Amino acid sequence: MESVIAAFSEDQTVRLTGVRKGQLRYWDKSAFFSPSYCNDKFREGFGRIYSFRDIVSLKVLGILRNKHDVSVQHLREVKQNLASESKDAWSGVKLYVVNKRVHWVERETGLPQDVASKQYVLQPIDLDYVVNKVRGDIHEIIKRDPGKVGQIERVRSLNKSAPVIGGTRITVQAIQRFHSAGYSIKQILLEYPDLKKADVEAALRFGEAA
Image (cartoon, rainbow, N blue to C red; front, side, top):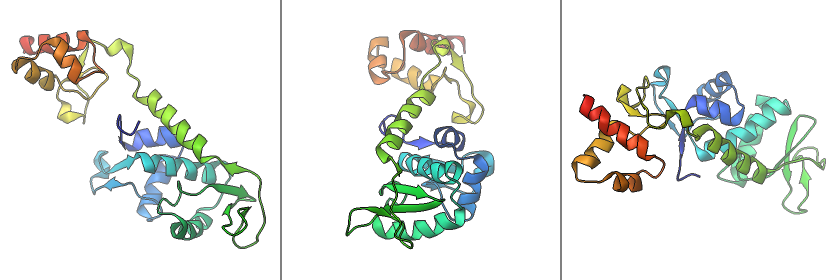
């Protein structure tokens, strides 16, 4: 799935993780959790781009914060300890929650426990489930609307409003360039396996109309 889409906008991240937009921005601003790719243009909607690993980590954080009501202060403390256990703090260690406190598996005994209280717990956050759920949700949000097949559209802030194949980020110009280079429709479809014949034909007609 990472090869299909590896960068996610703020809105997509909200949909995939259940973490609210306000939380994402506060966590970024307070240096609790920042996206892998960011710049100062977030007011234009391009400043926060999240990786697949970010999505999995935020899914875990969303479960901890919004489902189990673990405080951000406690999560900050946990983050420091997890960093010494794994380079992928929130996605590299199996986590557990008891009484709004986060636990992990104690190395020596192999049992899940709170680092401070030594209390053992029974309800793990199944990381495999989270990863697979995120993958499934990604399939859903990138699933193309069948009604856009063979359509050309312009989306504000997408490819500088250049005409694209409906429901995709593939520009009409890209299709036209392949056609000008001598590619047949069949060959173009081999370059863009997610497109349909009607998409390529629409792109070529658009060029003629222009």
